[in-house]
Length: 310
Ligand code: ADP
Picture 1 (tube, rainbow, N blue to C red):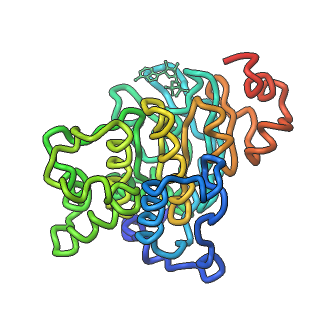
Picture 2: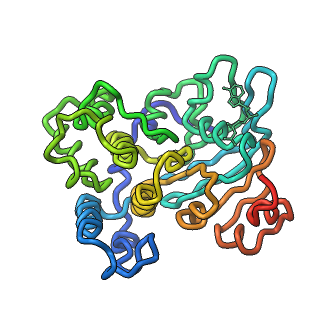
């Protein structure tokens, strides 16, 4: 049913690259904004090139399987028996009206839900075939492998840009000489390098909101996770910063499995391969994003995606 801690310590690179997938370079055609490459500004193109250069070949990702998951706050059941498979190297969006349990479900995946006093979860969450709720699992290792990006960018307020990104690797024991390289690489991978390379010692909170969110994503990927959970990552950002994060999500799935909670239906339509519609703690429908938005099977999904409720 489960394996002990050693396999929880797997690192992304150890899974190797998939030769069939390694040729899949990022889209050279239309970008996330729907504009032709010739219409991009020099700054956008150079940030995109910077991210592309920082990315290794596509890495075969890891799946997450949620099975009959129930989550409670005291006696209140917020997630009522959810089963979902999140495929590797794909973006899955979770949509649904406020309060339907999206954040709670996602926080159960990396065992953050149980940090809330009185909160508990039942059911299964598997990272590949490993039960992350097994008794002998190292919860810290689970949270390193399944990183999380929050709604409000939350750089450590007293830390510099460099130290914000370095904090994760340092906490997980990496104090070695490649720390600098890893920080630089993470900043490049999120397209921030060009914007911050001359002020790495300045405070992280001095950056704009969009830059701070990309800094937080850099901090998340600096510890080489396998899965990235994003809870409304763009809701505090302006449209331009949102577009940059969406482009980044599209690129990050080459290395990671991504689950994104969003109240922005257009965002789900733009970034997600598949979409889950939740209502009142349950999954109503899960399918390819295009189908959920254009040909949903359930009448409640249709009403939600056409703006008739929620
Ligand atoms: P969503 O992300 O879809 O907006 P949430 O997962 O945040 O929904 O909330 C699901 C339900 O759990 C809601 O009824 C909400 O009020 C409740 N809830 C969320 N967080 C807490 C908490 N810390 N304590 C008690 N109830 C909570």
